[in-house]
Every structure is written in C-alpha cells, then in structure tokens.
Length: 319
Image (cartoon, rainbow, N blue to C red; front, side, top):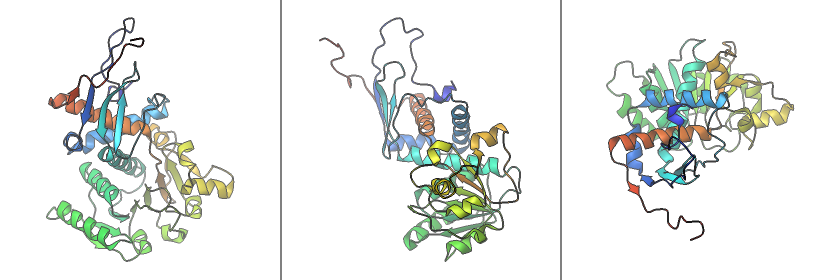
C-alpha cells in the first residue's frame, strides 16, 4: 500500500496482543497549517489515491466514515480510532485537489484553458481556485456567477486579494447569467448547492469547454448525452439523482460514460477534443482518508500532536 495511505504505525508482527492506540484530536487550525501552501503535494496524494482505488487497492473495506465536520481514523489491526480530525477543511481540500487533478489530465489532449468561469462562488469554489493557482494554473479571465449577490461579492473580494497585483493573474468579471459565463469560459467550474438540473441547453457548450461538475446536479441529462463524461467511480456517480444518474434513467444505458479519471491517467481512454468534456466526481472516501492521514503525519512530524493516552478505558474483556 502507498505509504501515504497506510494506517498508524503497527508492530512488526501480530503474533502478540495488539494494544489499543493512543487517541489524538487534531484541530481545524492544525489541519490548516498542515495543508496550507502544499497544493502540489496534495494533488499528487489524491492522484495516488485515485490510482489505488482504480487498482482495487484503496483501504475502503475498513468502513471509515467521511463526515462533514469530523473525520475518524481507525487503527487497522484493532479497529479502534486513533485520531479525530476536524474535517470540513479536509473535505474541501480533497474536493479541490480532485478538481485540479482532473483539470490537468483532461486538458492534456486539448489547448490548456485560459478562461475560467465559476458557477457557484462559495467555499468549494474558493478552494478549487486556490488549488488551481497552487498547481501552476494562470488565466486570462476569471468569470463568476451566483444567484446570491453576497456570495459573488465575497468570492470577488477573495479573487482580488488572491490575484491582485500578479502579472497574468486574470481579469475578474461578474456575469449576470450562467449562460453568459459558460459561453465565455473554456474551463467551467460548477460548485453550487443545486438539487436538480438548472442548466438545460446543450447549445451553451458548442465551444466544447472542459467542465468540472463538482456539485453533480447542475446539468440536464441532454447536456451529458452530448458530451464525453468522466467520473471518479461509476457506481457512486449513478445514484442519488445526480445528473449522470438522471441520464442513465432517461436512456436506460451507461455508454454515455467515457470512463473514469483513473482510466484517463492510466491511458486506457483519451478525452476527445470535439465535444465538451465533463468531470463529475461523487467524492471517494479514500480521498478523505488519504488527506486525513497526511494531516495526521504532518502534525506528528511537527511535534504538536495532542495525545489522550487514557481515552480508552476498561480494555480487559472479562474484567
């Protein structure tokens, strides 16, 4: 197993009784410090996790949960938890790293996008932009659109602080409509909270953009059926009324799926240049575990791990 995905250090042999691990609690501030400025390393980590998942080697059998606020890392041998991490940053980080990774791989057979547009301007949009910038992307124009004026204002302010004063950082434009933004962008990021498709016209995509469909439910099935669709995991994505699930329900088939991101990275399929390419990631628990373990290791390395040695009590089965 890739060392980045390995569990906490274990004894060399399991012939002796395995002791319950010490329990660590890692705060959001420690998570931020461990991840900040390491976009390239995290994208490489997420790529390794995708490859392991594609090979059937990711540690998904242990049933470790992914939660919106808390991530629990469990000891491989005992099943006992050994760390509790604030996970909203971890979830946003793995989502953004996945998007940046897909943008890189899916643009390798087409001109690299120079005009990016964000539909949905919340936390995830900010993280995705941070990861794109942190892995070397620059844009001539950055478009933003959201139904919330407050969100647009906040994201616009973030972009001005982030890119202001940097050469080739991109002109920021607020668009009044999603159509205007999509038509003027060759890399489209959909990061909304939509629970049903609100973008329905395939004609908006005739310029064949690359679309990072992070929020999963923005696009009508007709748009997907006219595009090359890449997912992170087929079974995960074809459920819960995602756009890909709706397309399957409409057609009764799955051949509109071009492949997985792992297929792209392994060279089994090549994204076409003559149609829109849409990446729809449902989100893999393995990515949360990979990033969470990376944070754990970084906090250990920094000497700032807060251990609670007596967290587990009454460990004798029969008293």
